Image 1 (cartoon, one colour):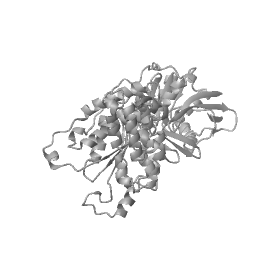
Image 2 (image 1 turned 60 degrees about the vertical axis):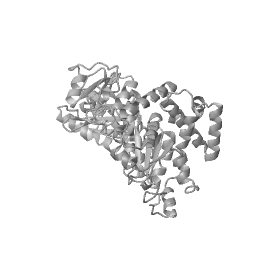
Image 3 (image 1 turned 90 degrees about the horizontal axis):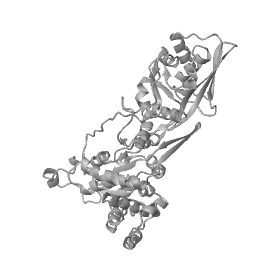
Image 4 (image 1 turned 45 degrees about the vertical axis):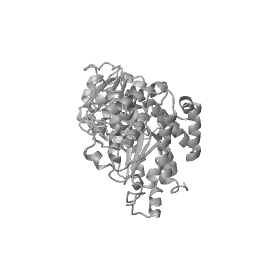
Length: 513
């Protein structure tokens, strides 16, 4: 007998429908698995065969052929166990169900028939819905995650016998969920901008960066609050839209990093890897490529503290993802694409001792140049806002007023975000930092006075084309924070001020880049 069951395969953050065809026929008893399989999928025959026997399902002593189609796509992981078991049961005459073509199955089998959780359940449920399936069978631990996909009935099962009872009609299948998961999970932060004393310039730069998702560089002596500011940026970022929430939750799901009991991440991620991180861990990779830190920070913040201490290879590997907002990893089995659509925030000292150009600096000119040269001009060109952190005075630390809270700052950021949402409605763009070419021309028009001012800045600072566009995009965000429909000279002046730091520190130090 022949049977066909459907499941979903995952490669990167992309998915494809996989059909599992089983044929039980006369011949030398045994199992034959075909279809471009990895070792863990080939091992599934032993898990499935033992699980079926321990659950009381005895297959006839015949030849069992299982094909995973399409055959030109490599199958990875253990999520094919459950659909393989259902397909074999149907082909062996032990399971009669007329609705198998309306179902999608995914789950790892234990030897006793227990169904274990899998990674990427949200992506699997999404693909099953897009393929027109009515029901998606998932491990019970992944049920809430599957419900977040919406538009499909999610059947959470903990044992193979339970799945079979649903298919035999002994248990009623659930109704289709038309809306994403309605459960709300409150977002809490254990830090707040009210804890920051002084540093008004850094606070202002962080607010602009959060409003337009602009890349940010904080430079200054140790102990001036650079890291403190960076760690509080997520507290003022706009609330995640459902589309953004699902996008980043998919990345965390396939990485196995979703918080226990939460189907969606629900808040913007903040990733701060140590400077000893490898290039592969930062960008993603491995034999079976998995998302790296830059993808885990998508729609949130990737913070690199002590930027020059990272390896030059790792830092330079960020250039293309920061520009294209995605990263493609090519391996012998194919190419895997992951998102890299987050805010890049970096903090650094201006020299090895941290006090250049102050009098207490003990570094030679050669040491300073060598230290700054670890950051290339092309990478600096991808940073929209650069600000210098000055030491906080005693009066501000001891008698200074409590700073403005994250809630107040987030209110202004949310209003600016709403303006951008209306501006880019109907596109895949959410923030000003994502604008390119024609969109910059359309939304960053200047008056005569503003155009003359920008021309003077362009010539005096010797800006590149990227630098020119950078000032326009930051100016647009500053105007949005003021709810101004037009970019004014004061907006351009503030935006160009965030570029002057490059000339101060790197004007002569990295001219060769």
